[in-house]
Length: 111
Image (cartoon, rainbow, N blue to C red):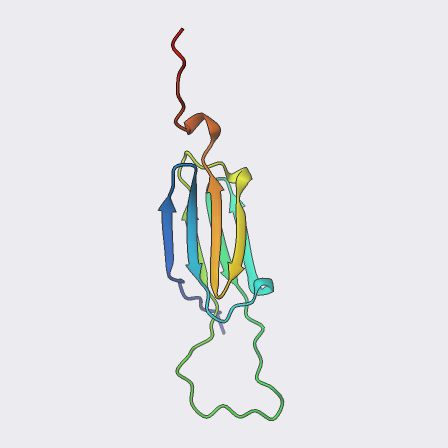
């Protein structure tokens, strides 16, 4: 049985005053090779590379493994999954999700 294996990409999760930002390194992965899904509060990433060597190309040595990545992350309870946005640039996938409005700090007027 030839089971596909995945590597976990390096990732950084940051909380900012209005939102959360998740940066995931995906070197050599094209935008159309990335699958991003949300179910409940669980965000799941999976890549499926389509890289093929050019015709007549014989690879002699490789130090850079171009493989597939997979990971999942649970969003904090304060995150609003309906506001998820994602972009990929220079091998970095950036996912942002806003905090729910009711969890935002606000000034209360005193009457």
